[in-house]
Length: 225
Image 1 (cartoon, rainbow, N blue to C red):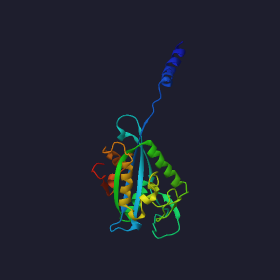
Image 2 (image 1 turned 30 degrees about the horizontal axis):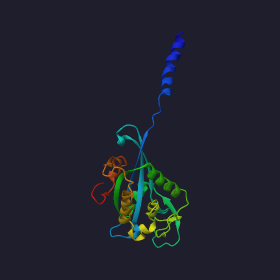
Image 3 (image 1 turned 90 degrees about the horizontal axis):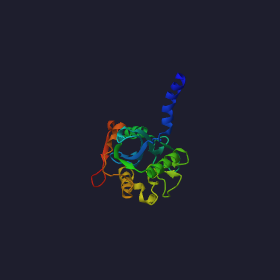
Image 4 (image 1 turned 30 degrees about the vertical axis):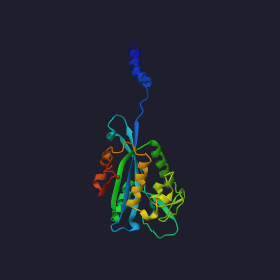
């Protein structure tokens, strides 16, 4: 009898746990845009990239959630941009911190917009682009042409090609660096892809250690984040 009671005592909590409704972690999605360029301006030393942040956890304090990073930072595999090169070359999608190291080695000024919260659809589409870049199907060329969907891309078209409405002509080659990055951010905002504009998500920057880098924070035209 004692043994039966002990077995029942052990099994009851397990049965209750199995009967309890499943608890699903909450997910939130964010994007940070970066543009860099040399002073004085030289096209060779410009870059545009974006870091996607997936926050997963439970509770109201999102700043305590687990973070998962992915970055669209398309450069030659050598990280040496040759603007006048005619033939496309092997590209590489660099992560956030490798990209920061590269542009700082070139003494480029780093500009940042965000973090902005985005929806799952926008996040998933961008993650699809990350997978495409890392599949080896895309080649790099600084002067990459005007056809969206081409298998040749420079750094900022790797991001702007996610725009299903405007083609590459809306993001011209003459605006590399700060200007083109800003245009991409403005387009995202105008399409209503930013959730809760004006909300402070700077906790993400602290969690990622970006406070330790010489980054200039930029804001959209009306002064709000």
